[in-house]
Amino acid sequence: MYSLVKQNEIRDRSLKERLEIILPQVMEECGVESWLVACKEYNEDPLFDFITPSLYPTARRLTLLLFYHRGDVTKCLSVSRPDPALDQYYERDYDVKNETQFEALKRVLYELDPKNIAIDVSEDSFAFTDGLTHSLYKTLKKELPEDLTSRFISSDDVGIRLLETRTPTELAYYPEVMSVATGIIDKAFSDEVIKPGVTTCQDVMDFMEQEVNDLGITVWFPATIDLQRGEGMLGEETVIERGDLLHCDFGIFYLGLCTDTQRLCYVLKEGESDAPKELYDALKKNNAFQDIVRNNMALCLTGNETFDKSIEEGKTLGLRPYLYSHPCGLFGHSAGPTIGLWDHQKGDIPHGNRKLYNDTSYALELSILEYLEMYQKDTFIFTEETVILHDGKVSFLDDRRERLTVIGG
Image (cartoon, rainbow, N blue to C red; front, side, top):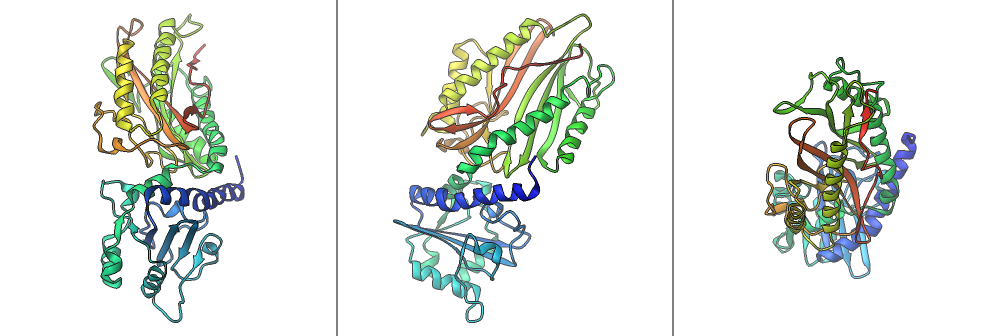
């Protein structure tokens, strides 16, 4: 694990790349010439943490950040109170002694004269680009003249593209973040932690939460440990027994990035030295469906198109597939195209209409339903891997997707 100083240095390097490399690209691509992100202290825009330095936890009363791009000119401006932390990334353009903050904003906008001004009001119900508060929106409409407010557009496209695109530093460090997550899963799925007939699912979840806390990082959702026994999914105070197939769903937040991983663990029965062959066969079928999905995660296809093609091909192979993958990066359920939902197995999701782009990251989350003789019932084979779409191909951040953990020997 890196020191806190090193972690902040890595995150701030990513910020610099986001503003200098990614921002001009996405503004040009989306046809946006200016973009205003306005934040109140303690009621910050969801974008705030990813466009400000690591040690800049809140807006300063009112923080106005203005991005501008036209031709070869890109500007990151702070129309806010003087702050040395922001000066490393933003050019300050606010004369505190001689103008109000909104007078400064009006002056700057007239000087730049952009054809449009993106504000964080979503037209398509995207939470990430809907962070402008109602009161701030009313203030902007009041303080700025109509010939400026008439240029307001939604920041949906530019905001989502900025958030979903990984910086070079994020691409380099993401495998390390994933390694931390899988290391915790490996510790949890072990004979040291799980004692058949004694340990509960909640005990394992508590262990994982403590491991995360001891490392000085956080989870973005509480760890889940459950198993399929009888008619349904059991967890929490359920005691783990020999012959159980354990399922883990786990995601951490480290170095500004989230992981999302699901793994399986078989608890040996007395006299067994390995899991039954049919369990390995079921995992291979699941991985075959993983390959179908990642091969269909092609550039410029939408999430819905990827879903439809993948489900059709999976069924052609005789599988009973379920697909519910999602972007994963700066947030766990992050910005970008949704590829199916667990409770809506149809390719007509509104957020699935967005296209897939290079240097984006996803949780490849899916399952197949397979009849297992060992349990005398249909059983879900759940898997999830954090992946990167880079150079038009999907690659895994961890290369152990074929692994089935076996304990209790």
